[in-house]
Image 1 (tube, protein in one colour):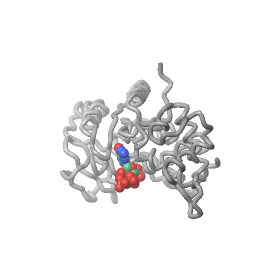
Image 2 (cartoon, rainbow, N blue to C red):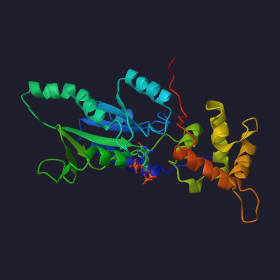
Image 3 (tube, rainbow, N blue to C red):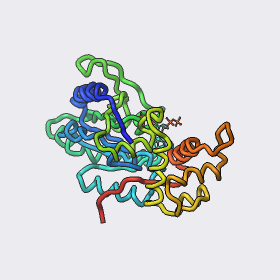
Length: 282
Ligand code: G4P
């Protein structure tokens, strides 16, 4: 399968990010807990150097808890502050406040030594499209937040969300694009729905997903769709179509419908908690 992207968007997004990042002390990067590696942007480490860094493993409700823990450890070992969250229902959000204080300890200390007291920590949220940035900002800021308008001498044209506990969040997240040259990365991003389905071959995508599921989570397909995993992935879509009554107008089994059903079920967490990428830990 061939995944394509649009370099024009990438260049513009990167330029905006370079500007915005100058305004903040802290970069809060969201990744998708189901594919924490492939849902990162390759430039973010360079862009965010010299800044405090937090990684949020978002959509952790859809991923396997066992691997959430492993990924958390993996990122921590690389020097990031890490929090597992569900931006949609707010799980883990409290811990983000603690992580911010921890991540910015050095800055706060430096300020204190210079006699600067109570200067808020400025943060921005970054991540690839659809990773949950807006959802996170809404949940994190909650109703209590107040938007600060343009302030003279400070970041003209930028809106900041004042959070309690001395934190200000740039209200527009930084959108960055994932790494696209790698076909496996493309496949994983397509599976989680980060690439528009219209430009993809759904049947092929569904078949690839079945292969991964059989390899990593044996038994799950049988449990959900009653199909025998001994069949080759190519034939399993038809089996799913049979068991789920996916029929075309002519009354034949509709493989594409079955693939759509399968992918929707995965993206909504109905098949189970599924991580598709694993950290290199013992
Ligand atoms: P973005 O700004 O990074 O582009 O992402 P956005 O917040 O728009 O979120 C993309 C989708 O991911 C939304 O679903 C959102 O509800 C969902 N989402 C965000 N965080 C989580 C999470 O922690 N867990 C789960 N399960 N879903 C999450 P949508 O289908 O576009 O909208 P809706 O169906 O929620 O209305």
